[in-house]
Image (spheres, rainbow, N blue to C red):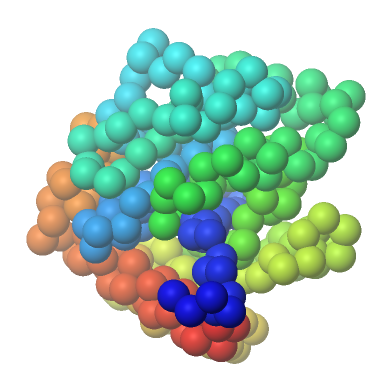
Length: 272
């Protein structure tokens, strides 16, 4: 490298928060399967289970009694990412688990300094170790989700194809804008993914059209179908890509990962 050449910026993971204050929209399923699909392309991926329900940890085959230190300890400075990370059955996919202790974190965080930045501070030491960090958020817009949004580069919003899909979403958009103004100026919406899409149901088409009309190009072309295999996989502690790779749900998540990577490449070409 010539002496006057600029020093390359150190590698840093892209951090995506998967958020929607509505429950049952496919946040955890999308986190697990998108993470698995990204890892299958050779990316090093870390999933941070930031939901007290701990479903991302369960869905990756880690039982509640096996978890040890995890996201709770990260938030309170009791451990490091390097010490909390666990491997999974998927090569290049890692997880920081959630324990029942996380359910009390909302109240405990209120009294702490930099309460909105605890997760960002914890993850800052791990950026060079991964290509992507996916944060699975709880179905609420409290301090746990706020920590995820303050730490994230962008937000991926899973949206169920149901009648009330857009209702309440404006609250999430307002929260994202508030976080952008106050805590994280570079935060953006990476995309909206339509989940539980039922091709036999005209309502799914109507909802999809409404969402695309509202969000435009932010909505991924890929839709995640309502699929029995996707529903069964967590009970076996596996992503659907391991449980049944040929299923419609698994194939949809592979296509979604491709779209996410394409958007990331386009962002890099624009921002340099």
